[in-house]
Each structure stands twice: as C-alpha cells, then as structure tokens.
Length: 137
Image 1: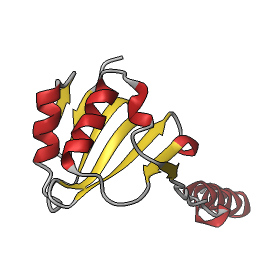
Image 2: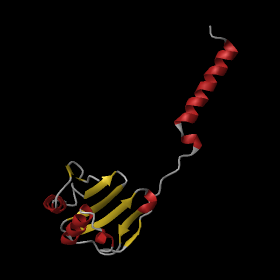
Image 3: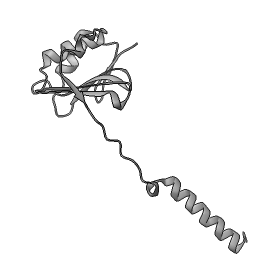
C-alpha cells in the first residue's frame, strides 16, 4: 500500500525516513500542528503537537471505532520519528512502543426536524395542497 505523509498544506507520496524526520521537525505548534502518515483516509498514524513540546499520537485502523490515542506525557520528537519510520516500513513494533487508549469521537446525530429533506418535502406538500385548492391558474 502506498503511503502519504501530509500536513495542512503539504503532501509527500512514499516518504523516506529523512522526509518524515524533516516534516515532523518542522511542526511548530502554531501554523503546522499535525502530520499524518496514511495508507488510506481511514487508516493512518497522526502526530499532533510541536517538535519542541512533544506530540500526541493517534492511530486509526479503518473506522472511528478503531481509533486510538497515545497515553501519558507528550512523545518527544526523536521517538515520534522512530515510530513513524516503523509504521512506514510496515514494522508492527510501533504498536507496542506506546500505551494506547481508545479515542472516542462523538458523531452528532441530526434531529429529524433539522434535516433539509424534511423542509423540502414539507414545502413541496404545501405547494401541492395550494395548487390543488386554488388550481394551477
């Protein structure tokens, strides 16, 4: 599977270890706050934070129910580079490098009355009733 390393405004296809180190080292915590190494949109390893303060790592393996976040103190730059390099090479040791906890993402449910479809259907019924009552002309 092809990997892509991306930030807010840059993307690198099939990044090597030097590119990974350069990109992670450039995260400043202000404008550039995350880097994502992804196999696909829903399968990735992500570092959030800055090179000086450390990173929180997140990995997702296919769906939001399989999303995990690193536990404890921020991960230092050198360790983050090592974990990203292992992930990019398919080395499964990155999983045991940190303690992970489930990262629950709340997906809000839209109430039926907040749906545009309900308003469109309601408005269409109102027009149909008006035309039926008054006639087309």
